[in-house]
Length: 203
Image 1 (cartoon, one colour):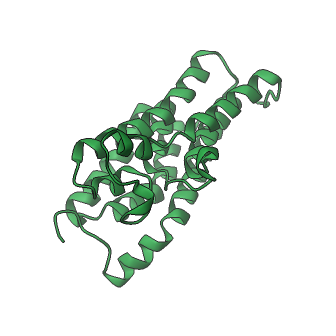
Image 2: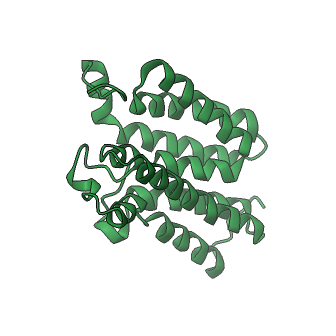
Image 3: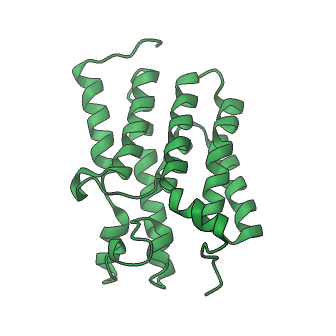
């Protein structure tokens, strides 16, 4: 289980992971609710936080659940199909990158927080719960979703090493996802430093 099995079956799993990751639940659910396309409002992001700005909390919750589910499902299926550990890790990374760069939407996707969480749930429930706890603690103090995501992303590699040190390839995927999450939040970082980032519960 230490070598990547780049056979046809492995390639199919990885490509399928990317295609599933490319499904934009924020866009789909907004259409079902007859809400504005999330790419045209607020931050222009397709994730749950921007969908929440429509005022429909249920739409945001469904978007969050959908994006997390699509991160979890392909990895869980690959695990239970007996795929090599390295292939499972690549499936997880492919799903995450699919959300960031979806083929169905001209490679313009979201920031990947919920999808990364879904991947981590499949890797380790304790890892996911710990990351959620960090996000929640920061959010309760700051009321800033982006800051919560950034702190959780920064700490996720350390948490992953705590729970997944026997599986370094999974830790590597968490590190890569954390790096992308921080990069995708560059505009939010600038607003946080300037003190202009939106706080939930305040106009």
